Amino acid sequence: MSTRTLRVCPKGHKYYKTGDCPVCPICERVRQPYADFLKHIGAPARRALESKGIDTLFKPSKLSEQDLLKLHGLGPGSLPKLRKALKEKGYSFKKS
Image 1: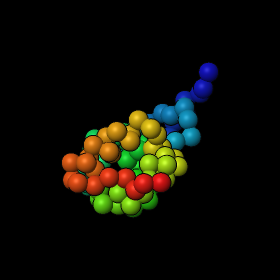
Image 2: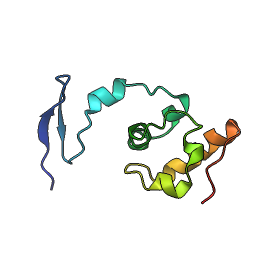
Image 3: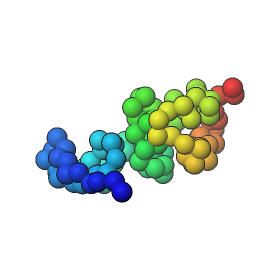
């Protein structure tokens, strides 16, 4: 059984976690994504995209699905939501 450890984020929030993920759950709950399409995908996938500067739908349209799946935190479950958002704006993923 994993042991929960007390952690404190840079903003001073105290929380317990069992894994190595450094994300403060309190900060994550109150943070709103800048881009509207990012609101509809899970937090790990959103952070993966944001960490690579992908904050508009135009940017993922320049990548293939395989490129996106290489990002830590973005799995196959996020692709249908991204695909739908791209299609609504007339974009699609780059063909691999």
